Image (cartoon, rainbow, N blue to C red; front, side, top):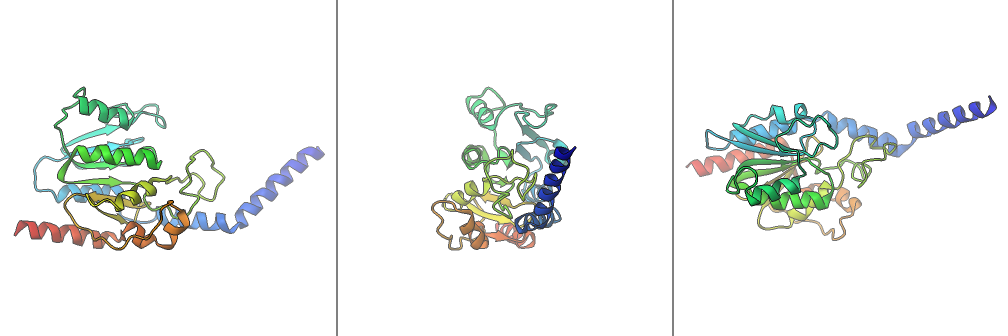
Length: 259
């Protein structure tokens, strides 16, 4: 009985420390703030698809998990989903593969057609920089010249949201996990073959385009991809902009090309 009481007291004391810990308080506050931001990724993707001057649009989603969260909301004529089914055993997608396997099979002609191009490719698979980087490289091969590569989770609100492991749930981020996606996006911010920006909503929606210049502000030096440097220079590092500002850039580009 005494041991049971001691265990309960330890649990109570731990819970009390967590509730009053400044890192946990900030982490919870930042998570709630991000959850309440709008628009969602599906709104942004649909906006991008609507700006393209064609009747038939093509869409690829890497990392579908639960289709109702995003995939089913996308308004494209042709849609394909890729997911190995790690988090959803039902896995109702077109290609039950890792993204690496999907692109390898697409490239070799085993699925679809190696000449097939997408208007929008949404990357929301494994949130680790090395994998996201490969997904970007592969996507660039199969995106239309005026298409868009869209990435989720590019703007982690705290360092706890940006850890490499998704398994630890007692951190201030709790179950919310952006991983190290931001590092892959930051790497491509330095690549002159694409233009890039990050929309400040829904955990950071990264956009890559071959055609539309979102601006090239001076990018802070962060050779070792330190989160604290990102945090101090967030706007410049990610080219972080509002959705309204993003729409103005897209619409301005569209008008100039229609003239």
